[in-house]
Image 1 (cartoon, rainbow, N blue to C red):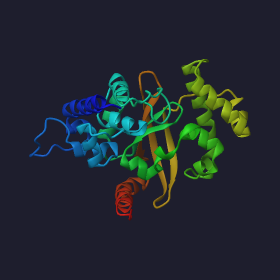
Image 2 (image 1 turned 90 degrees about the vertical axis):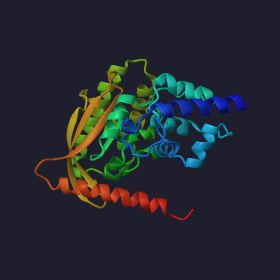
Image 3 (image 1 turned 30 degrees about the vertical axis):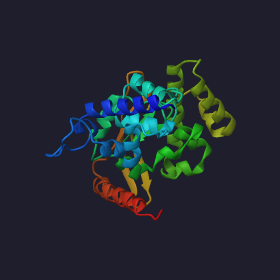
Image 4 (image 1 turned 60 degrees about the vertical axis):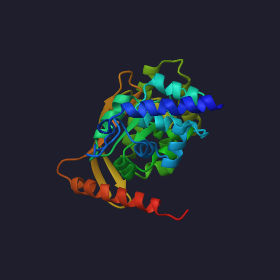
Length: 289
């Protein structure tokens, strides 16, 4: 990148930061705020970057952000698809195709998720790739951002990695298997026969899992719109939750949020989840470098 590109990237980030209010991203507006939009440290925190690094980006000082960082900034600043593409162009990075773990998250879903501060919530694709999680979802389900390639899809991990099933009681595994496959078949039909992403995933699952191939051959089809789940948490034990789903207009993204099942002790356990999640974050922050 030349100096003019660095400067343009910094100017674009500043312009987008100025237009976003704290309330839009789930932050509280303090009485002494001196800027119309977000502060630099707030954008850095939302994107998972250091304040010094983000300051360097805005100054056009020569930082070269990765695709993952650009995508995190696009989410933090609630960029539209066109604005996100422009950000990647300014950084001279290829604009990602609209799938996988760095897909563009629907801004409306991000806004809604940011308001769900007391319940686990996350945005996933129709192929069960997690795009973004709130802190409570990370505390409940673990950090899903570590997965890459086909393994970013929970459906893929369900049939290829035994560890993926440990979160559910063994008695629920058969039902989950059938639900995943029926949902994937519905997503495949909606995407169409020419979609290489879903076809590649299905082909790979056929080659890796006899269980998948057998279940797929039953031709069950149904989108997963709501579900009652039992989740095994390493510290809190068994939690019974209702998983609710909001679909984007094209059906390719879903906002999931988890509420405690009525009449169970999960209400109290989810209250403890926030404490556990905060303690984990603090423990990571205080690890020696």
